[in-house]
Image 1 (cartoon, rainbow, N blue to C red):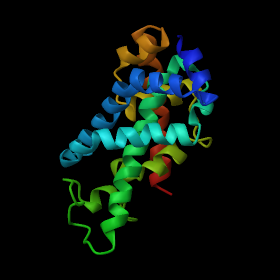
Image 2 (image 1 turned 120 degrees about the vertical axis):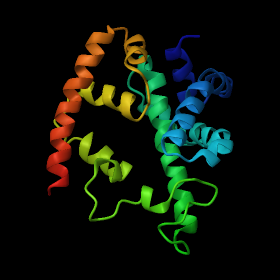
Image 3 (image 1 turned 90 degrees about the vertical axis):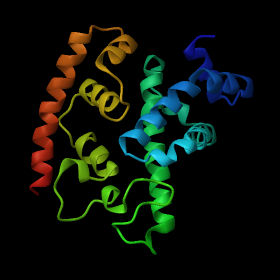
Image 4 (image 1 turned 180 degrees about the vertical axis):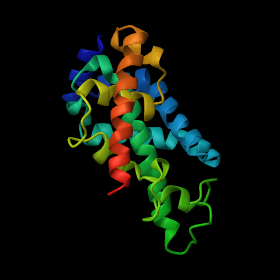
Length: 199
C-alpha cells in the first residue's frame, strides 16, 4: 500500500490501515520525541518517549489530523514536527501541574529542565528564550517573509532535527539546493528575529 493510499484509508477511519500507519511511522515519531527531549536536556523524560509518542498518534486519530497533511511525500517531516510540538505541549503540562508551588529556579519534576529555561521572561530577548508558540507564530507564520519552501525546510531542520541530506532525500532534490534554501531562509529569519526582539 502506498503512503497516499494508507493516509486516505486512515482519514476514512479504517482501523486496519491505522494500525499499519502506526507500525510504519512509529520509529519516525519516537526519533523526533527523543531528539526534542535530548535538545531540551530533559534526560529523565527519556522513559516517557513511548507515552509521548502514543499521545502523538492519539491526537492524530482523534482529531483526524491526517486530513491536514497536504503532501504525503513530506509525511516523515510533517510527523516529526507534530511529534516535537506534542513533546513541548507535554512538557508545558508538566510545568502547569507543578508551577504554582514551585520556584522558577527549581527543576520540573522528573526532569533536568528548570522552569526558567522554558518560560520566557519578559525582559529576555535572546532567541533561545522565546516560547515555541511565539517562534511558530511570529517567525514562521503568515507574518514572516519566508517562502513556503523556506518555511518547510527550516521547520524540518530546526524543529524536526533533520539533516540537510535527509531533507534532500525526502524531497528528491540535491543537498546543495536544500542548503541554499535553508541558508536564505535563516538570513530572512535573523532579520525577523532582530525586528522581533527590538519591539
